[in-house]
Image 1 (spheres, rainbow, N blue to C red):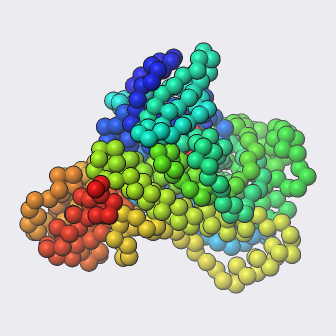
Image 2 (image 1 turned 120 degrees about the vertical axis):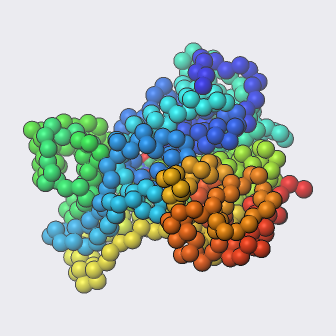
Image 3 (image 1 turned 90 degrees about the vertical axis):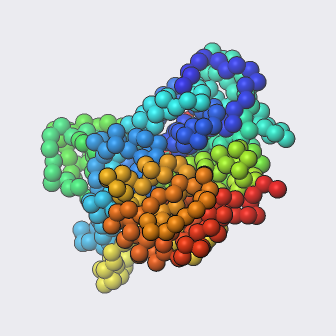
Length: 499
Ligand SMILES: Cc1cc2nc3c(=O)[nH]c(=O)nc-3n(C[C@H](O)[C@H](O)[C@H](O)COP(=O)(O)OP(=O)(O)OC[C@H]3O[C@@H](n4cnc5c(N)ncnc54)[C@H](O)[C@@H]3O)c2cc1C
């Protein structure tokens, strides 16, 4: 990695990633794994320190595994048992249970984490990757698309120098107020939830096991609130701000301790980092225009009730990086990049719409509505299951397991499937099948353990083709179907292949 104060003029990169938050850092790492020359830019001198994401899922952990930081992250994570929604009188309205055992992804379904620590690990990994040019305090203010590349104009804010660079593609991972999104000219579709919440992280001074390990949504119309057990000594409370409440006044320590008094006092904990946010729910209508793309909060934002904002951005990065790499290598036509939005947009939308529905339960403020809500929910007890959306139309056969996230079986000698596959297409195949002349870009992996064979059996297939982002591309029921399946991978759908 190269952190230098100013950019050589007119340097040309494969991809410029604008914004090195969790999504940009993940994308830049994955692009580097595919051997691309990446310019990674962020306008800030350091990682954002205010409280934000606290939960991610096993699918994100698989992406971190691919990048090579999962084992390093593991000791700093807390395996989360789920979330309870309590009514105004404390009765259990909804139970969202998460297993604390490792699941089909080979990781746990839900982890609590400290976002700045994750971002530091992603950036440290980026520092080890060849081909990555990481520039902090570099703010991009203009992107101009040409026939073969994109011209970037930026300011090195440490020196005030104005610089230029060019890249074949530019991905704006530049957050909610994305500059790249404005250059694309895309608008946001409003999914209609915009509420102000005060978010308070504390560090416990002493053990308080009575606070519990489950997250709790206090669906109290007088003051909707959330408790989340973070990793180590970190605990979080979130309080909905009511109409007319002044964010600055509510963020004062005396107001915060008043709100927290039901659970803790200054003898129990120190306040770490309060912040007031408006939780938006929006999806951009257009994630790509020519050589410009957006990912993460630049493309969609969700209220945090499902812990899916950053997670969705990590999925964007994993979906997009291999497509960019294939297009840049000449293995696929540019149209492949259109499948990024067609696949990802409906997927993230399902999470946002579910979060908005849960937000409706949590944020009810009319006491009569809350009583009716509690009566109805108690009369129909529900166990909430995590959505498992299918990708929208794109590079998968559609139907059955195609377009869904695949499992990660353990292979011989305890090796995890993804470690063997790398960030590439992989075919898990019945170990008795004779597969001749397979595409060298597809890793052939024999189902050589009971776990791997069992997954094939449950799929009703002898082979399953997984994409680099671990989504199922398609199945083969018999050995003669494998050729067709591999052709499908090799050309990434024939209609997407370069002429
Ligand atoms: C209170 C709260 C709780 C949350 N809880 C969860 C949770 O539990 N789980 C979850 O998955 N998500 C959660 N989220 C959402 C999550 O924090 C965000 O989705 C995530 O941080 C977005 O990452 P990003 O990389 O897309 O954008 P950001 O993290 O916003 O990064 C954007 C980066 O772009 C840089 N940048 C912007 N413009 C430019 C420019 N012109 N030039 C150069 N650099 C630029 C910025 O400096 C910044 O570093 C929560 C959010 C909040 C506020």
